[in-house]
Length: 348
Image (tube, rainbow, N blue to C red; front, side, top):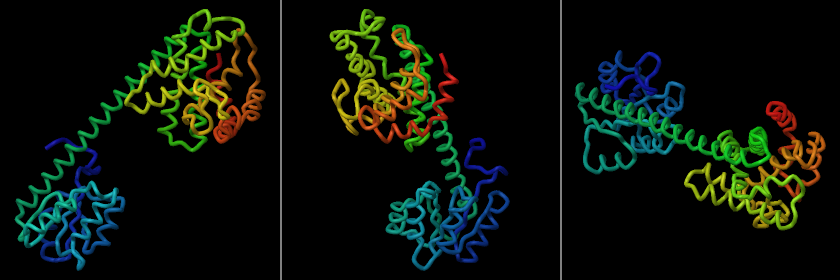
C-alpha cells in the first residue's frame, strides 16, 4: 500500500461510515472493521447526510440497500449530487445484485458492490481497493498541483525577464513596474475581485508596456515633447505589445495581451489604439489605465517633476467617468492608505 496521504486522519485510520438499519449486518461489519478503521454509523438517509457534512467526514461509505424506505438509490443520488460528498466512494451492499439494480447504482455513482451475506475477506478487500484508489488519486492531484505550480512560476519568470528587457530601453525604472503592478492588484481587490484574480492582474500588469521594445530610440528616449508624427509612432507600442505576447492559451497571457493593447483606451472612447469606450475596454485595461497614469504623475521624469499624491489622486477623481472607469476609480481612491504604503515601499 502507498504511504500515508491526506485522506488519512492524524491517528492513521481512515474513516468508514456504515449506513445500514439491519442490526445483524451492522454488527457483522462493526466487528469486522473496528480497530482497523475509525467507524461511524447511520440508520437513515438524513443521519447519513448529517454525518457526511460534519467535521469527521468519512473517506468511504458502506451503503446497505435496506437503509431507508424510499430506497438507498435516493440516498446515493443525494450523495453524488452534492459537491461536498460526490467524491466519497460508496460501496453498495444488497442481498440481490441483479443487472437492473447494478446498472442503476453505477449510473448514480456507486464505486463497488458487496452481496449479502457479507464475507469478511471480501469486505476488507473491497474497502482497501477503494482506499488505495483514493490514495493514488490524492497523490496524482498533488503531483498535478506541483507541476501546475512549476509551469506557472516558469511563465512568470519569462514575463519578468521580458519586462526587464523592456526596462533597458526605457527611462522608466523597475520600481515603476513594481508600483503600478501593486496598484493594479489593489484596485482589483477593492473592486471585489478574488485574491486569485487580483494576483493574475498583478502578474499580467508588468507586460503592459512591453511593446515599447519596438519603438525607435529617437522617439522612445527623446527628452522633449513628441511631435505629431512621433506620437503616431509611440502609440504603436500598444499593438506591438499585444503582438509580442500573442494569443496564448493561458489566462495570464490573455490578461497580459489585453493589458498591452488597451491600457491607453479611455472610458469616454477618446483613447487609443481602437477608440474603445466603457465596458468594451477589457477590465484589466481599465485597471491599468488608472494605475499607470497615477504612477506616471507621482514619478520624476526627464520632462517633469513628480506630483504630490494628493494632486494625483485629485486628477483621478476629476477624470472619473471620462478617462477612467468610475467604479474602478472609486475603488482606487478608497484605497489611499494601501497606495501610500506601496509608494513608500517601492520608492525610486
